[in-house]
Image (tube, rainbow, N blue to C red; front, side, top):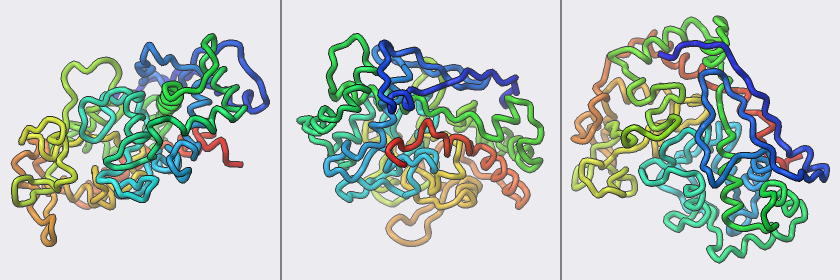
Length: 379
């Protein structure tokens, strides 16, 4: 259980307003993080240092529809601020209308993520991950031209020329793929959620910030037989997140969501880390996402096949999901690759209410409407 500490806040101010008025800084000042005492600043790559100007530029690029092949989508299409930078769909839909096999993960606190996709252990840098939606073909997401002709409208935009010069001072003024990716990654690192009622309760010692039901739910969350903390522990509520190099490889989990008959126990388009490792024991293993803001990021699981938090609790109480009919029928409890921690438990009506109250206390309403992360093109 996390120990409450006194809040320590460092003011953050973006340069977007100044840039909007035509100001052009001579140098990019260091970035300031707004963090409570329980949060250390995230690790930042040496080749992409944070700055206010770069975050402001990344924010504009994140919301710019010109960063899709047919101009219909932006990064924000699948990462909506009001939904904690997820999109509310069971599965993502790309710029060509192609449905993806997996849902869009929340970008909240992504700076602390040790792995950045549902099931690929090798993608660990935001600068590398950004290339997947930009240029990936299986499935098509943003669908950008790999020859980089999409950069021409940005190069013709005087505002962008000024913003790139401010974000990369002392370097030749140019708009390149590498700088676009670095700026978007910097903006995503800035999306830190640490102002939920739960945070005010723990870090600001505000006993009234969460309900008595939520307090009981936190105790259940961190106790057996529920053991939710096993995969969703720590300040980020995910064992795939944390500052500093991982002491051991990130764990991916098979939670018994499926148990299909045949060669594989999971649907062929969603075999988990097996798709990378080709080890049979890795079928159905996926990353444990953060539970921060979980109440606004439905539907749940990697493929959006669980609609509500009540259904999530039903799944874990049963020790795996049973699907009685249809092509996905099977008893997930009996999946041979299922994680040992997913054993099932008795869930009373009161315990259900308390656990859900606790999960709802993780919603950071300030983040969902924070103008620092909003669409700069919307007036």
